[in-house]
Length: 111
Length: 113
Image (cartoon, rainbow over all chains, first blue to last red; front, side, top):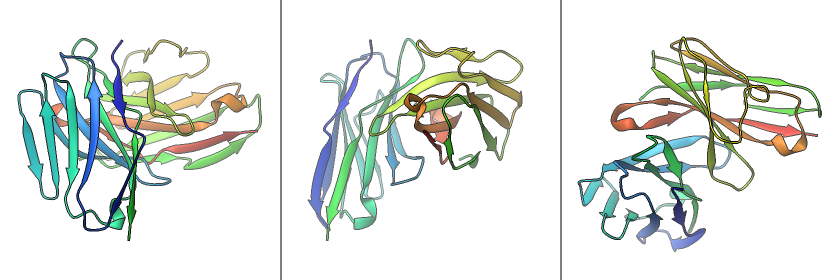
């Protein structure tokens, strides 16, 4: 079945850039998403990219998609303590048209 | 994006009882979804709810355990029936948006004793 994998944990210092990585197996995925979950909260949609794009930039966020390697990344520039959260990668299954979520990456920002 | 609210935000329930979770959206939406997020885990889709039709359940989830209502285009309920401690999770509703995105509610944190 479709699978989405992420590393569990990333620690960075305030002001540095963070890069959160995601790999997926469904080569027919049309849209790929990044969500943020702060403690005790629901999921907030951060950004998304269509599968025919390589890159998308939105203020401090840059999404890179390597479709050949089925690799998605989220770069957060000038990371702040308020960016501390769990980040979920999600892909829209090409056959199922359903969102498949990754395992989530806990980003810890050290002051 | 849609504004979504859920009630209750959290609850502690006894084994064998049932809890109904409400999801309200501030605009009309076609599709609503219910997810479960077990402690420390990712999200798992329970079912998709379209107005005017029966909900479509994912493998491993059945209507008797998780009955869903969708009476109109802005509201849905999920009931967790005959609860056991294994049902302790966060339950989230979401709605469809542009580019097949989904917008999520704040979640309902359920603890079953």
